[in-house]
Length: 491
Image (cartoon, rainbow, N blue to C red; front, side, top):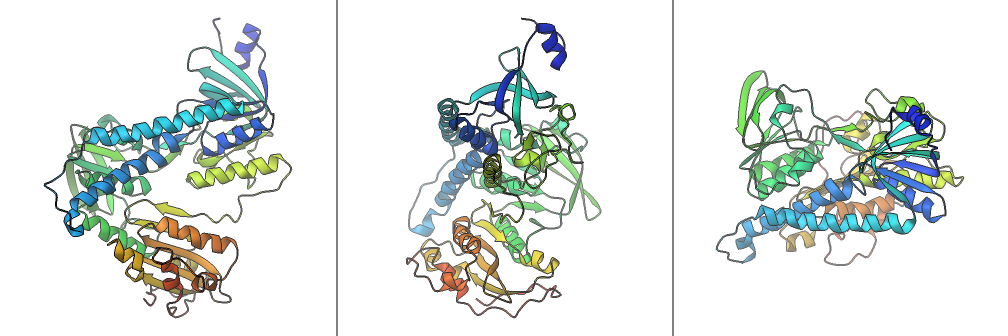
């Protein structure tokens, strides 16, 4: 059947009626897929429209595949320092194709699981580009050809984001890598130039360096992780320099020539001086852009923010009746675990609950080696908010398990309220910092005092036991909000 025209006009021309669903979801990422599976298992008729990545970016092109390659890089780092552990090697070589094939095998397994979950839940998984044609009416340009029209009692937008490409002269023509293409490199770049010092840029910088690439990282800010505390910044920058990663900070990129994968040059200004650097590949890690272009939001009465995200309230309701948004496209913090919590908010509110995004305790982990993890307030944030605190801090070297692993780099610190013993924030830079943070977060969620950790009996020797050492230190002098100088806690 040939369809002439678009949207409702095409439906009229062909005599087509929209298919009715209880829920139509655009995108199959974390929040979207769990909501679809849950409601379908409850007997509702649910359709999910996915343009490319079944299960969303996390299992396909983001969190999990990147951590897979990061782990391969960690194994390579063990070979590089094998002598430290009393193991003699005659040398080693990285076969990048095998590294990538290991990642691909994991991704295939994850996608297969997702396909089965959609099938077993009863969700109608539709492959194609979904966009609004009217209020709660979604038109799907099918991947296999043709169209479908879906009318939902409820519609949820979970379209996600994509890598931003700034309007730098020559950048688009250089055909740069984003995280998607970087995860498919079958050869180690001889010299990788990374523009952007966010999570993606930092994780790829260390991984590629350990796999054998020369790496130069350019960032517009005067420091890496400029929003974090000075001690975190110092530790991460020192780590990168020790591993041979060139840091070019306070940089303004002016133009790019050449082609990534062959030969490329970045011209930039640093502290007012014109400079340039040549490399073999460029990786762009300059932030994210919401996937709302071509969504047809205006046809559904869905307003967007000035940055292109779906405008939602604290219940994730859009400006259009019967339309919600979840995950990054809704402007939520760009973490998979937040998208999952978005799902829980909609799941419960659809059943008559009253959950909100307000007051969420958002943890994060930067998966460098060692990791940087934080939950709650940093010192910088506490001072900006006028909150006084007591500071507990200890080096990772005080954690005996870290010594057995020869992983003593870093520190742990906690901010404790002045008026009681509740934990305001926790930061760790060290081996398995993300796992250690999880224990502290549970104490914070339970509104328990820090003494509940200090006085606990924790298994020896474990990394978690280091929390006893942390909370047994003598706290630094009380920090008033007017204290602007960064002070170290006692070890």
